[in-house]
Image (cartoon, rainbow, N blue to C red; front, top):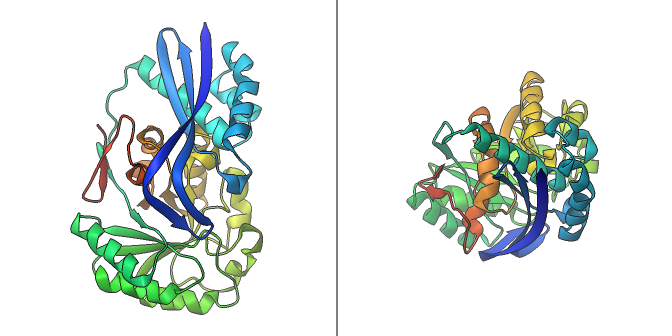
Amino acid sequence: MTEVRCYAESWPLRTAFVISRGARSQAEVVVVEYLRDGITGVGECTPYPRYGESVESVLGELRSVFPALEQGLTLEALQTMIPAGAARNAVDCAMQDWQQQRAGAGAPVPPSLPTVQTLVIAGPEAMAASAREAVAQGVSVLKLKLDRELILPRVEAVRAAAPDAEVVIDANEAWQGEDLPQLCEQLANLGVAMLEQPLPVAEDEPLAHFRHPLPICADESCHTRKDLPRLQGRYDMLNIKLDKTGGLTEALALAEAGKAAGFELMLGCMLCTSRAVRAAWPLGHLVRFVDLDGPTWLAKDINPLRFAGGRVYWT
């Protein structure tokens, strides 16, 4: 007999998480428990308003599929029963967790992964101070959240504070296309290693009309394999997140298809607990950049992984 249940959790952050869309003070997640044969698999998702999701909508979507799950819906059939997104991710990961426990799988390989450390939007000096603190703790890759204001002063301040760190930028769709070619040249001259989602999804066509002096990564523009054709010629890298792909099943397929199509890969996460990072672990060795620092923003975590020296360790 299979039993499935879901519930919401709210996790306060240790400090505000500020990106171009605004600030957040807590992580709102939904948890699925998949109980079968005395084993409980657990999955977690983060509903994202940018994609039309809320805690309430995800809980409703989950409850609609529970009867089929309790009657034996397979992981393969799940992929077509719920569209890609947070709800399917929670179920997919719960079922994957159940399968791993049933198989008696031990700790994964590798036992640790490198991860970037995110610097949220603040004044140039405040971001520089955060950069100094991060590299003093052993972080080697800094991810700068930026809006359209003070772009170069903020990057210059961080670069001066952390001259040996690798720097990547995430604009979360906040920039405009007219000045992007010149701005990309300036960022490349400052040693920026990658630029993530500079333009809105519906306005990213200008990316196809200039040579990219640094890799440009699709985040909001890339959810599943269905997106790959329109990304060709516009982006050089894909940010794979389980909450976008609808779980590990599609995430692994997207990674394989993306690599075959010539894209570099990045692994990302939402604001989440260590449960969500554990679920994404099998992708870590496949990507150029790992961005799994979501749990480090929580005031308190559950079954926490260990983050130290720019790495996350399986515990």
